[in-house]
Image 1 (cartoon, helix red, strand yellow):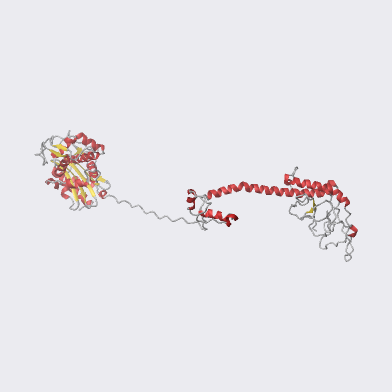
Image 2: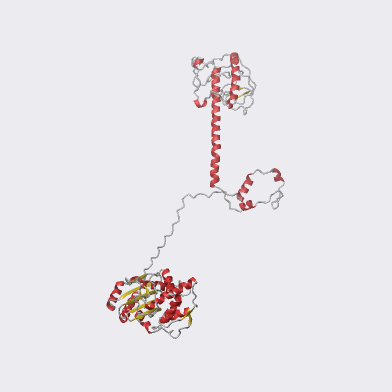
Length: 545
């Protein structure tokens, strides 16, 4: 038998523990079973031990109560030499009995519902305890073996009182109740936290069910014996429902049951290729031209002249010129460029047809090949060809009369060329001081650049290469006299006794440039020589040969 107090092995017939003197209660309670944990008798209807709190459902039925053996017939049991002799505690008054220290958190004035059953069983045992203790014979004092040295027998402590046993039972009950409460708290915490963890997992692994998920769930389900005995053919299951489109789409998705494993080493970011340096655009060759050198040439060749020049790169529109390149100067025959530009712009807008009939109403002196065509009607495009190839005054006047001065000025001014101002027909008067025609070198370069770079569908670079070429002897004057031999050269000039104007386009197949020269108030011979010198400098600087 195991002592309920010190848990040591004692004789099955002993009424008191020979080690701690605890009373072995056999017949104190009409018990139907004994606790296998502490060895003490408990009521037959109790589901928990009222002494140690162990669950009684799992215990085997208690054996029949052993007959009480008188104390005179008990054999003395020698105490264990290794065990320390028990010291009998001094009896204390009932008022001085102190219950074991129990934490305040575990003590409550009202027992929990779980412990109410324990208390009821304890109350029934306490009621029967006095009668049992009165019938119990006095515990015998164990005799000392003869082999031992003479010494007084150990004083055995009196059996514990019913109050002390009750308190020990209460302590065990409260300890069990506290354990149940702690377990309940842990369960509640898990119940509260688990949905949050599941929600985080759902967010991290949101996916559609795959075919492997369905197969895995099918493998985990317990096999139905009925279905195992009569398996249906896999190719045509009788009880299978038609697969929905959603399930079919889900079954074709790749398996995502396993999350991708994180690599042990963090992936190093791929090195970005070094950006290639942007090519620095080369400066236009026209920037090499020094206007100061042009000033020195003009001072040596045509001192006192009113003049201007400009050189433009067709590719990027870069332009270099003299101080007066933006000033509106007397245009003479160079008014043909504003006429040509106005026709191209109006044809592009759909307000003018190139084959429109134009009547020649007057004959103009000076350079012309249409003096015998007065009263005739020619297509507008044919008049443009005469105007450019021969610098024909009759063709220019017929076009200005057909288009009107106001229309030509409005078209050119409206497109950014404000220096254009046509007010009179060529050679219609000898005094141009009050009613002359004007344009600037810069605007001449700008209008020709738009035309030569094909910004208009009807009149472009091809038209200029075919028609902008002086056919008479005046073509080899000024800039035209020093024109490069290679590539394409197009020019238009106008000359009077005290004036020389010329504009030219030079294209060597790689680069194209526009050169404009306008000068007056000096004899034409001096101005022509100055234009020639300026042309040589420009073509040499641009390395045009």
